[in-house]
Image 1 (cartoon, helix red, strand yellow):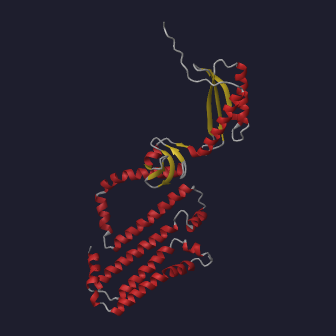
Image 2 (cartoon, helix red, strand yellow):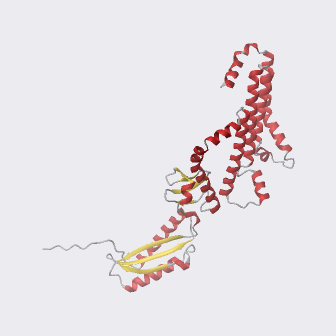
Image 3 (cartoon, helix red, strand yellow):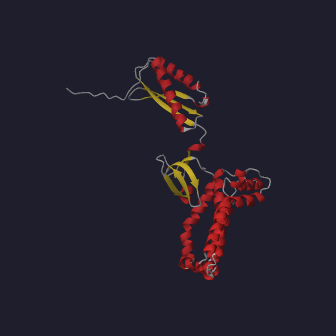
Length: 353
């Protein structure tokens, strides 16, 4: 609050500022703003002499932080030119240092983005062969550690005694432990998901609490988008302890149909229809031949039941629905060709005279 009050004093003393110095300060700030991107490009280029791709250089994690740093540096130098009172300028210097620390942390964190070139090189050198989910999780861990370190440095820069802070945490260790217990469970659950790999980002899963597509896995929770396009956030500790179905990992889908023929259908036609349906399923290249089952299953109250079962290599749900529709059409056409009538649920009622 004192820093804000001191900064407000600048405007109160504006009448004492030399017009020439004010104009010079504005020019310096504008120059650094205009050439900030150029300076950032030159510095990044110095560490990537072999790279000639401008877009790649601008994608570097430090490019934007360095660009912002030069803008702040221009403002800082401009304020220095204004000859602001020392007590106020010391607060400005402290703010500038804090911003610089944050920008350095931001640049380091950007280097460990899961899709950054630097992170790709680190993975190659360490021969890391984890999945995209594991890579994203590891990236978040490293970036969190970087920001925590930056936070401690900024805290010290603000003048807080870290030893006193540590003592305070020691006194309240029981409270902190209780508060962090659930967080620790979720972090451990997150590691279990990454190591065991029951699912990955993009997989369609079904748990005891929800059904949907996995969009992200963080330290604390897993985000799932359900069929209503809503985001469901499930704590990792719960999802790690729950049984789940990963539909994306399936290697085949099951097709099943029950045909009920009229009870007076000749047995020769029933037998002939069964053979024709087997040949029909065999003609589909996506159907696993050894999975085809067409049998006279039972005699129900409505008629003769034929059970048709097979597995297909079509995994995508939308494609499977199309396959299923086409196969149903073909089966009905075969039944009509044999001039066989399908039975419908019926009930005989006897009236007493």
